[in-house]
Length: 376
Ligand code: FE2
Image 1 (cartoon, rainbow, N blue to C red):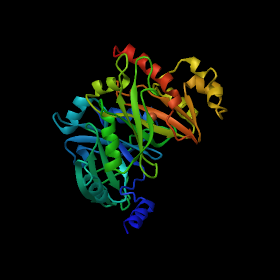
Image 2: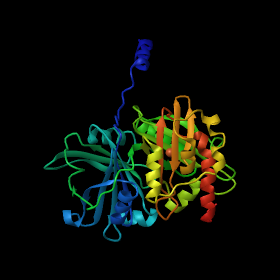
Image 3: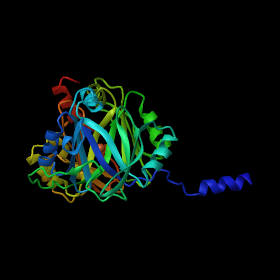
Image 4: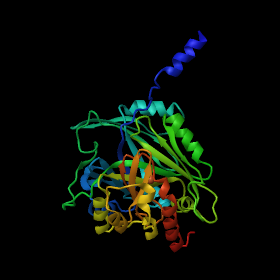
């Protein structure tokens, strides 16, 4: 009896207790949401979608919702000192507050995760207006970062109740950014495995890749990383922790300037990285630059590419290959004064990995920037 029971259990398909259908939006807490929104519209090619603030009956904050294809960013600033938003910005500078995930049922997602040990950030609530009903709940993540669970199946409005349509009054063409490919967190010394367990036990994710300090160390900068993915692979969260190096690693620099753990970078997908990055650069987005020697013998290292080598070199786009194909990627400089949050632009041509072959060249480029800031 016991034996047949255990056979049945192990052969039964694992039920995903937290089905996720992608990233609904990413909310940034910033010092000046009006100007941040302008930057992401003009430089990154987003469209203004919705707004909430004093004019909509919200007294303590202003929020701007921007969209580009399946990407939604929200920029929120406090209108008064001492609010949780103002305190967040005072401590961390501009940064990611919430990674909102698409679920079937926000109350279920909250129950499944809090019953497995997640700390509640927002109890399940149904909010409604003339466009329908939207379910929302949330749990705490590393640092002051949170996950929100959003169920918008019964909601037809632009964003969510409490927001009104917003037209910034000028046009900006898309740069071809499509959706969130992955979102990376930096956590403190010896905290990586704690957050790996959190994603495994609380959210039902799996560790699909691990990089140790052997993979990711240059002369100075060392870090360890584990990539966590949900069951259908729509949502991937790599987690970094610093490792001992000769000097201060990039993760340590982040932890110092962010005053703790938080989102390090958001990777945005494009299906034409050459076009996207050309546009972004023309509009003033700054990218890290690897030395030209990176492109010597690149095709011998990664195989034949559909893109023109000279174009990739001109832009500084990096290439890596895994058994399933190749990927193209490039990393922005930090997008605020503190050396904290930045963006990755990524185009996947079959590859499901994260550019391990580029770590060394990339980290040397990051160290050059750290040195300029006096933080190495
Ligand atoms: Fe990345």
